[in-house]
Image (cartoon, rainbow, N blue to C red):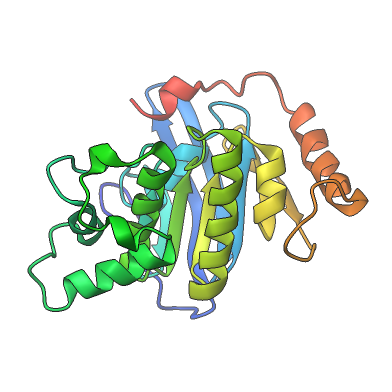
Length: 258
């Protein structure tokens, strides 16, 4: 299906894939953010996107989530998609469990399912709390529970740990990996942290100039030791690719989202 001013189409042709992109293009004004972009993402695969500011990482994720329109190309995604942003985006006037169900709180069994999702992130005891009583890390775990409530085939993570302190960030990374191994959605993680990308992903894509400049497999056992020689070999591969990209791609981070 060709996309211009329409949402991503369902992926039915290949049951092994969660995402298929062919020839995708996106501009903001004079800035070409994505250029003839191709990508296949297998179901259950964990993909990290890295690159300099303005290389289209967040724009690509927003297009996958139906939050942004591509200008041309074909885009097919798995049926159920959830997004977790850097900020938790909880509704202050709704209790925690109602934030998880997002307007479905009258549906049969909604509270029980919400409690199960909260249990998975260690917050079942705070189901009836107000969002203002939560720490930043707890709020982000509620956002993750909300994403999992939909049983997504594709989970999109837009720098979800960026606002967390180092200790909370490490715990949140471990939690995401644990939940991914349990539920097995395909995952797309946008991050500026190379160590985070290598620690979490099956593949690391390096973006530059609106295209994929490197597709690096991470064939390391989990949990991953960030001090291990093999880990640092992969990390150096990613850093080497990034270091050879131009300082600016002609885009800017501000131009990714008008």
